[in-house]
Image (cartoon, rainbow, N blue to C red; front, side):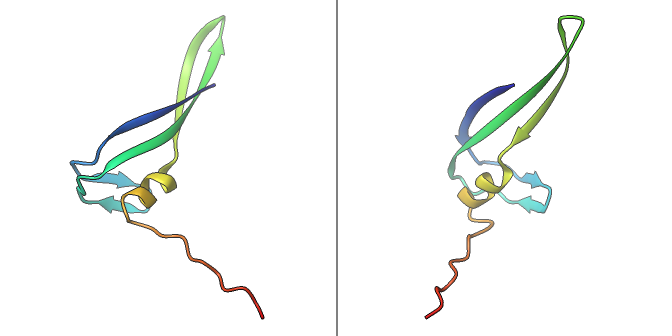
Length: 71
């Protein structure tokens, strides 16, 4: 397993599981996890798992809702 950060500027449409986000021009930083499958001592498959929620939040496509505390 590898964990790393990708950084860049959002300049084109971005397709996410919940829809497309048009270009914003914002700088973004996304944590990504690569899960490597090993067969016969060699990498046989790679599954990339990006933090799409964190990315969507940085682009203003979703927001966290603050719950009010009960009195």
